[in-house]
Amino acid sequence: MSKPEELHEWISFADPETEQTWMIDATFLRSNWTCIYGNGCQGILDDADPTLHQGCCSYGAHFIDKEDLASVKKSVKRLKPEHWQNFDRGQKGKWLGKEKDGSDITTSYKGACIFHNRPDFEGGMGCAFHVAATEEGERPMDWKPDVCWQVPLRLEQHEEDEDHILSIVREWKRRDWGGGGFDFEWWCTDDSAAFVGSRPVYKYLKDELIELCGDEIYDIIVKQLQKPQTTFLPHPQVRSKNKTK
Image 1 (cartoon, one colour):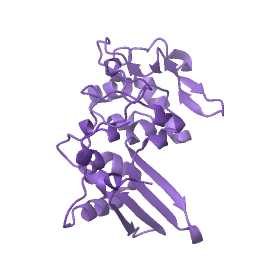
Image 2: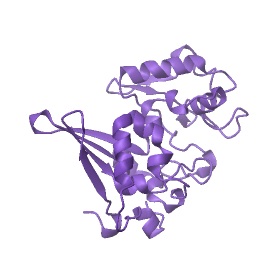
Image 3: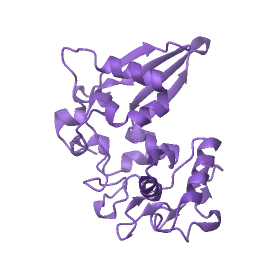
Image 4: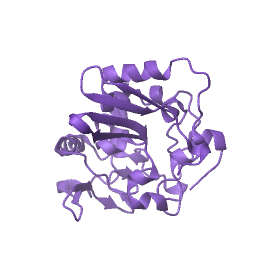
């Protein structure tokens, strides 16, 4: 059961075009969470080590579907050695592996995703796709596996009676990483240190929300979140100012 300080405010509305109801985590979307990669992010290892600057890249990335994989294959072909520290290692398809269940995943190399550039790389540390896209003046999210740009947003689709769909847009929790997420020593949405952005999440992650929900639904989300309220409920980590596991 959630503690009172962990409660979130939710808003729901009907989709104007389909048999679908949307439910959004208003508390998180109004919060000032921001990615602090390279500026205090401690990563997602069981024993936090911010000096590695791995962020969410400590493990290989799974693919949502065939289209996701096809898109990343195109991105890989555009990477150059100056973008990707492990360029030589990743040639001849060695960047792509298989899980035990047969699903596709990016391989790991030297303790992180093969597309992770270490701090000593002259081309820039972090995701090779992010480095390349930035250099090309393009959106990094258009180069990366879907899961990599979706975090810390989570879209869930639940089929209800009469084929009605309930779509939930919320904060990515530890449980969304699977059982191992609870072993992370640190997770960014659990720490007030990541709630230092200059814009609310629904503006900061506008492109990501539009990609997940579509332009029309995004506009509705914005209108709902901007409606006058008696009191907004701050995000739990802003209220507590605590670092929690």
